[in-house]
Image (cartoon, rainbow over all chains, first blue to last red; front, side, top):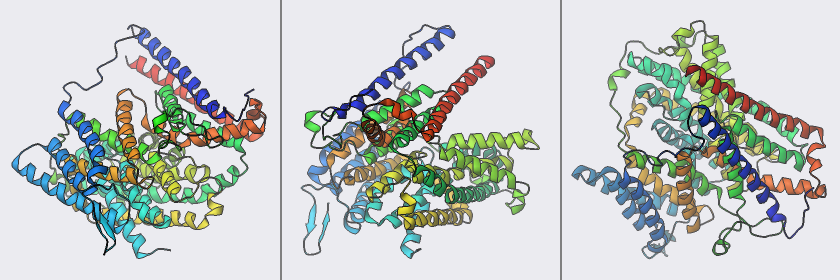
Length: 145
Length: 492
């Protein structure tokens, strides 16, 4: 029997699911622990390293930081300009500072955001983040976000 | 109706799909997820053309790197490497690619036939479902996931239910009360996290984090010589392969029907069966067309199969069709048992678009294959920044411009990355996330009607059948787990 009361029924299913999750978690811990014991190890063992050995710290954390910076800036500055800056920074992070690399990065970071901005924002009329660098051409009825 | 716009959109979709499929590490799911925002601009029919074309192209593109550089472009082309790469090493690269492309076409067409025949039957059976059976079917979907998460049964079920829990962080539609939402987010989360940011986060952003961790310095060796051999492709390569093609395509279609299975399981099973039935099983793996045919026809067989439960029950068969569900939602169409009778026109569009996508895929890949195979040399480090930008556009536009959805994108990206680390299958999580709301609604409807009695789930015969299926899927999972362990013990 489950008592369905209007004011609290929004908690019925989440509570059941939480219960199921706890049971499943216990089952996972027990079965995997027992398997380890069978294999001659301890029931609990120190979890393996989370990150790969010698992982690329700069690129991983750089991606996270740039990503957050990108989102934080985008609706303040506007889509096109922010994207140019951050696509360039991402390219820099992933491909380095060589002269040829820099030129390619620069070209991609100017062309790609412009293309996407015009394709999505102008031709397809999809809402893009707007900010202080967005320009609306009132006479022509479109916005470069 | 087929219009010029639709054909152009179809060609665009197939080509973009092939690019995503052919670059190792990028998948069909990613292609569909990243290009979904483009469909906001189109009506439903054109949108479907684009999405199905991306899907077919994405699945097919994977055979190129599998054959030429021994790296599957998508998980579903793992078995293509077994025979494709040895052939390429002998200088039969072009022949292998063309055999793969023709097999893909056959697989796609056979599964389309299955889709056309079986979806209406399944839908009409599902029409008799009350909320009780609908609830049980979703429960079944969540356990089947587990049965097929090879040796990860508990983690698979756990991920599915975790997805359900996360999707329930919203305001409940019946009494408009919030649960699991902090006060400062209440204005943003009345209908919870949106599907699109969740999906792109889990399948595109998480992938970028993983590769950033590995340093993103993946380089592909040029292998032009492998395309210049004396042995040319001819239709004789398919002599005696008829049964193999049909069997493998049907295996792919069937595996596609089961939720959460994915292409790699389908192609591995089809390959194993091809070996079982082969007159020369010892030749498989050394570069025979037979193995290639089995692998490629099964993974394209998946495309039609995965659409069957999607259109008849509203349950996605794999992560790519999960994206299609959100496309339907965006266009205001509910998939489920009533879909075909209420939207006969859309149903026809899907069949025509799928047929056209397969044919376009064949034309685009078969003749200019030497040119197309250069795709694998595009450096991902240059593509990812642009993909991040497009993902942000997609997430932002989900609810017509909310920065909250873009933050959600990043959160799910990080979550997907962590899932990869602690071996929680993201596709199971996603299926739970998609089905969670319905699961809750049908459950509450069922027990409200029965005045709180749980016996309601055991009273109708159709319900019993579904219970049996649930029990069978769990039993299979346990049996499979044990068999796996015994095998490992025997090997050690």
